[in-house]
Image (tube, rainbow, N blue to C red; front, side):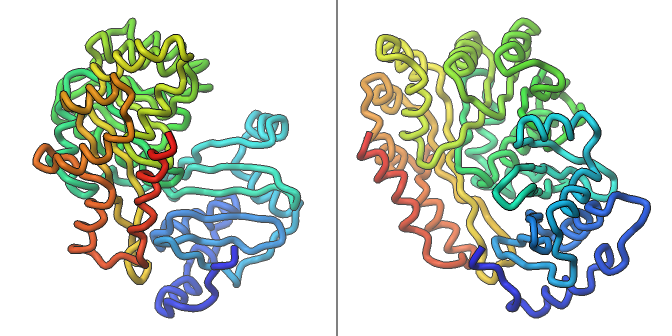
Amino acid sequence: MDDLQKGGEPELEEFIHKIEAINKPRTDVPEIVNYLIAAREINASDIYFSVDECPVLKRHGKFHKLLESPFYRQEELKRLIYGILDKSQIQRFEKQLDMELVYVSDETGSIRINLYHSQEGIGAACRIIPRQIPELKDLGPKESLEKIADLEEGFVLITGEARSGKSTTLAAIIEHININKKKVIITIEDIIEYYHANQSSLIDQRQVGVHTLNFTTAINAAIRSKADVIVLTDIQTRDEMSLAMNAADAGILVIAVMRTFGGSGEAIYRMLNFYKDSEQKFARYQLSRILRTIIWQHLLALKGHVGTVPAMEIMHNTKKISELIRTNQLDKIYKEVGKNRALGMQTMEQSFEFLQTVHEIEGNVSLAFKYGKFLLALL
């Protein structure tokens, strides 16, 4: 991490030195919990633990070393991290070498933890999950996002790179439905980050590996249970993609998340790429009918590292876009999105240009958004 900051932001650095959870750690909780409390206290997004390093906080895209904390050796760090794992989790981690889990307590809230082994030894990357689910108006164009939540059926995809805020956008859409609609909602999640209490809707959250064996069996069960809305936090196989599309074809609203590095056209390409050449024609036809919206998002750091804001490409399916999907002209979708702002669509560049008028964005990142367009030229 060459860009770790020891200085800068004097007021924040002074505050970090005074964090009570570190200077006066509690002895009635596991040692690592004090660091998680500290991260929450200063609104950090992440905290990292590595061998022969002090813990590192990430706040609004900027790294801060906790220099007054110990530099943990391999066995010390292992003891620190294992302090919040039960016996079965330790056994699973030592067998699989990588593991993802959510740690929850009153003091820390929900923390998504990725554990891994490296040449140096054990390590952990911890993501601080906000306590409150944001409202749609706080994330992006309110009308466009509410349009998704008002859908009765069809397929919606939320895409982006890792740590681009996909889970937060998904949670906000689910909660809007939960509060404003009378629906049966079943979520199928790799890790449950946000917890939804029943409001006007009835919602069941299922975690793969805990409440169900895998996504495939859980999707089948959700379809049989007559769910109105099925939520999928990850699609990785042809079977999962096919079941999700069939559920949408049967009149269920399916909202899914998939990791991508480009815009709507690339997301469609990746979805279709699950299918064999002999299946492509039917897959394009089915997707052209059931697809409702694709969101591609990216988190932007605000100037001075005082926060982040999501930039979003939003594509709503139209007769023209449906035709482009059926005829495999995916490279033309980007231009079509840009022409239809009146329908609630926007390209990533248009989103960035708007955000520049209301926020001070850190650096010039507009060229990065041309990457999605460049990638489409290679399809």
